[in-house]
Length: 103
Image (cartoon, rainbow, N blue to C red):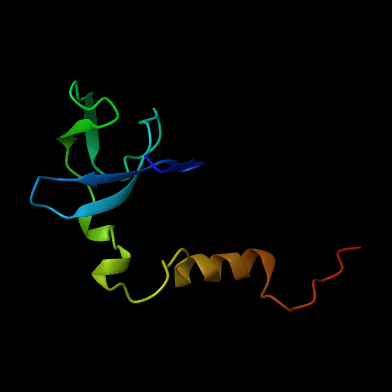
């Protein structure tokens, strides 16, 4: 563990003794919230109590939607689709367009 914020606990992990060290965020499962990665279980090591053995309980249900800095993403995450923007404009008007006076 090397940090904590509103997203969860920031950890370093290694999938096997031969694998590289990876950074990740570990967050508890919460009822009603989607699973946003793999589900793991932790077992504290007896020989080194500040280390844990990690077992994957459920693989990431959407691995194709995950992109890391090392995977060569094409830019920032796209959080709004064109359809969403058109709906927003239909309700609220375009940015910079003066609103109509309802009175």
